Length: 282
Length: 309
Image 1 (cartoon, rainbow over the protein chains, first blue to last red):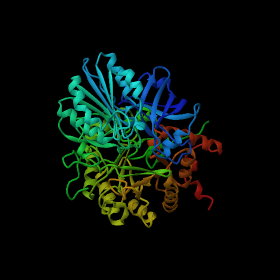
Image 2 (image 1 turned 90 degrees about the vertical axis):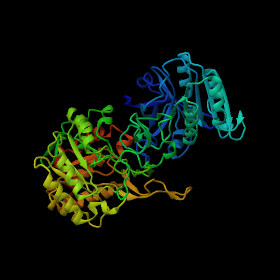
Image 3 (image 1 turned 45 degrees about the horizontal axis):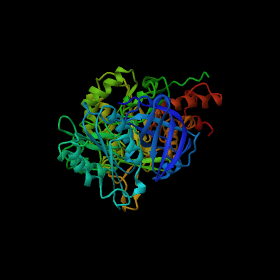
Image 4 (image 1 turned 180 degrees about the vertical axis):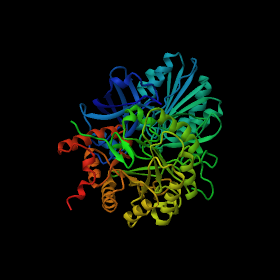
C-alpha cells in the first residue's frame, strides 16, 4: 500500500493544452514520494458539492519539495467544474495512490505506448528509464491529432517517438498496435509500458505476450474511493498461484502485468475466479 | 471545549461517537493512512460471509446527486481468512471492532455466529439482514418479519451473551417499526439503521442499466432524510433499544440530527469514499455543534427531538 496523504493543495497554474487541461498543484509533502504510475484523487465541486466521489488522475510530473502535475479531459460535471478553477484556488487531494510502474532491473530497451492523454505519466517514466540507461521508444496514438498529448515533450524525453492517429491527421494513419510489433522487433524491446483506454491496453498486452515481451498496463476503471475500501474498481487478474481473483485497480493497480489481466473477462466475474457465483447461488 | 463525546450501544461503551459503516471502510486497515483507527468509536467491518465471494460484475458504481449507487455484492475473503488476517490486524491495533455478518440462508448466519463466538477482539456483532445486492429479493431477510426473526433468533442462540447483537435494517419496507419490534423480540440488543435503498440508473446511450448488477444500493446524503425519519420512528416505538444511526452523515451537524432523532452512535459510510478522514472530522465537528448549543455530552441529546412533543 502506498502511503497516501490527504492535503489541501493550492492550484499553482491551470492551462488548456490542446484538447486537455494541464494543472499544477502545490504538494511539497507529497511530491517527493511520487514515482511514474502513481495517481492522485481530487475532490470536486467544493465543500457542499453534490458530487461525493473524487476524480482520479495519473500524475504527469512531480517536482520534489514543490508540486505535482496532472492532465485531465472534461468528461462530465466533475472535470468540467475542475476546468473552471483558477490558479490560487484550493483543492482537497489524496496522493500518491496506487501501485506504480516497475522499472526493469537492467538497462534494457523499452517501448512506452499511450492512447490519448494516457501519455500523461509517460514523460516521467521515459526519464526514469533513460536515467538507468534504457533505450526508450514511445508510441502515441489518438483518434485525431488534436487528441494527442505531450508529443513534443516526449521527443525530448525519449530516444524516438512514433505517432499514429485513426484519421491520419497526424503521424501514421492507424492504431498504436499497427506499429508496435515492428518497433518491438527493431528496438529489441524487453519491456512494454502502456497507459490508455482498456481496448488499447488489451491489444498491447496481447501483442507483447505474443512477442514474449513483459508488459505493464495502467488500467482505467471507475472507482469510488481510490484508497481500497469500496471494492468498485475490481477486475479479474491471475495471481502468482495461477488463481483468478477480482482485485482492486486502485490498490493492487492501476499498473498490472499485461499477461496477468484477463482482458476478455473485464466487466465480468469469470466462473473460475475465487468466490465466483455458483449456479443457484448469489 | 469540554464536551463528553463518549456514548454506548447497550452494554458496549464507546469512547467516540463515530464509527465506520459496514462496506465503506473495508476492515479498517486502509483508513490507518488518514488517522488512528483505535481512536474511532469503532470499525464496522464489511459484511463477511462463510465462503470467499467475488461479488457482482462491474460497473459496480454510479454517482448520483448527493449519493451513489453500488452493486458490489458482498465481495470478501470468507470467514476463515477474515479472522486470520482482517480481525487479527484490528485486534493488534486495539480497534473497537463490530463484525458485520451476511448469510445466504438462516443456517449460514448461525454458522458465522458460531465461528466468531469465541474469537477474541469482537466488541459487537452486526447482522446484515438487509443487503440489497443479492440476486434474490428473498435473501433480503429484513423485508419480511418471519425471515428477519428466524435469522436473529438463530444468531442469538449461537452468540455469546457478553457482547451485543445489532440487527441492520432496510428502509425498503412498508413499516420499519414493526420489523424493528420483531428483531428485538427475536433477541437483537440494538439496531443499525439504515442500509441502502434499492435503486437504478439507466445509461440512455447504451439503453441499459448502468450497473453490471442492474440494481444497486443508494447511499449518501441523498438518503439522509429517509434515515432520520426511520431512526425517529423506531426510537419513538422502542426508546430503550440503542440505535447505531447511519445514512448520508456528512458533517457534525448531520450527526447531531441523528442523535436528536434517537441514535446513540453514528456510522459514517459513503462520505468516507470522498473523504477518508471524515469519521474523525465528524466527531470533532459534532463536539463543536454540541458546544455551540450549550450541551456538555453526546448522551444528553440522544432522542432530544422527541421531547418537544
